[in-house]
Image (cartoon, rainbow over all chains, first blue to last red):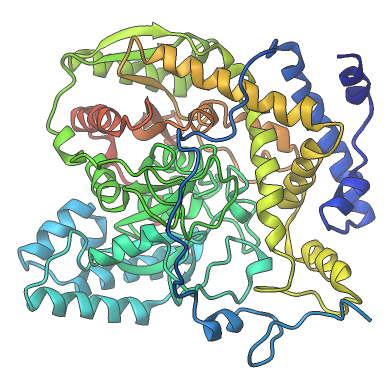
Length: 101
Length: 486
């Protein structure tokens, strides 16, 4: 619990987290989001007051654990329709900036 | 005036050949032409295509085909894929996207003959409670154009209330069907998690998302649920359970039913008219033969914090697919793929989506996962247990849908947390994975609609539809129409 307390005292570094999420922020956004998100994260700290020791975490609402099906070849989406939605494409491929020099 | 009729009434007229689908679609298009310039419930309306679909439906009927929705125009929230139509999710990042396939729910409506006439406005990626977060402009509340319609399915609620559609679909992750239904005075149903396949519903928070009907009557919601419900191999979280005859449950009255009132929900903080209308609604249910008992949902107090950890966490993962590569908008001038992602996302997403992506990434990041995300998942278990306990002593729970009626445009935009707190009565239902219904229960002194929420256990749709329908028939609030736009 001591570790948790230290974490709650330390503020979120909005620019660092935005970079993890592959989002670039303007200076104005960084300042505005920092204030708003600090306020929200502070509100989250109410959960720390609850004793949840030994409670099973709930990841989803259905009793289903896994679903299996036969590994069969089935038609996918029409390639031309899919390519039409790509911002840049060749007749067969989606184009992106150079990945490897 | 065909546009003012309910789905059930329109179906009956079509069935008896007293009107054609073309007449219905034309009446709806006229209503859109008259009102939607001001209301802005629709992002796109394809009149020509809708009239072609109507013609096909009329010809099918003439050839002896039947369908529960044959020829009925339905508006679709811009988050659900309809083949050949745009699906922007209210975001600039999906500008120019055309759906290459039908969502399963859409395919099931199509199989019954529904006409898809347009796409309704929404908070970007369903993140918001007022439809003010759309990249394509706000939607106004048909009862008072200075007020929000609620959200995130604000467009769907507004067009149903303004008779610009016969019925609509929305999606509900933390109240996005029920709260706008409450703000606009229509019916909104969030089914049990997994009851309707999510295939083709653009994901916001996958463990919470459900598609739901937004309609003029409870019977209409039951009909749309009937058509859409059932397992789907394309969504492994869908429930492969028998679908009951929901309309049969509408024939029962409330005698023998026990309805619970959560004591934590009526302890102040409620808008005075909301509290009055809900208390009156409870008395109506008592008068109809229901037994009223008190129940306790103590962990609802932590529901907002729990929801705004879990939903953004899931959203941060789901929205990673919007990176300028495969679809929609791509930023110009990127030097490498990482730069492309960052610039595209910076230019393509609006502020609320960025906030939630950052928040979600943060609560999942190393060092914070246990403190936030894992704790929230544990509290989620406690919230579900509260409902399980409560449903041992009652068949359904009554509460307000939201603590306030529709607020003024711009009133809550500066403070995101303030906006989040308005979701207090709706998010517990999604966290527990159970079902909830919003039914009109009167008006504030300012003539803004108020909604009564009826919550049921998992797969308890029959119970909540029964309560909603009996209440609706006894009160007739649903027959009131806004006059502010005509």
